[in-house]
Image (cartoon, rainbow, N blue to C red; front, side, top):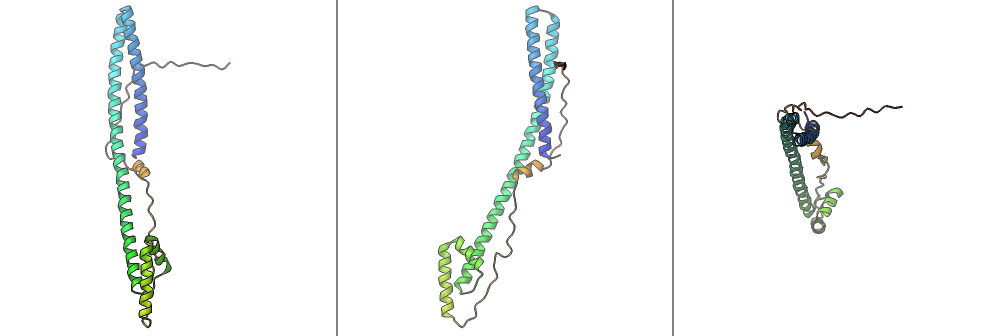
Length: 200
């Protein structure tokens, strides 16, 4: 099961259990109050029964919240892993880019001919380096007029497509890494007051 799907189920459980806890607490409080007023043992028995139901619901709620906590930890781990991967790849790309720029700089300084695209990359990377490389290129070509100049292909011909990163999507769609237990939502003595509305 995907983490996002598990979140939906267990958050739904948490909402139901939370509502049950509130309703049971109010009914128990009411039964305790009636017992204090009337000293009727039936209200004391009802309060005791409601206390047991409240404890069962509270236990299920805590188990459910523990699962949500574990899901959150796994979600965060996948998210952080994806972000780290993105950072490493960005650093690798920057290092490759810098290496290509230095090769272009060296080639130009030797008087070689490089594609305009490569010259633009050098100029974007460092205008001062580009200026020095152009001056050296012109000087070397002037000194060695008869020498045939090497013509290089662009180092950026086969640029890799940028990977699109989606840490949220990756984390949501990761498979849950542990067994998900079924949380038994206890049957409670909470009576829902249903209002019948008739259309006249």
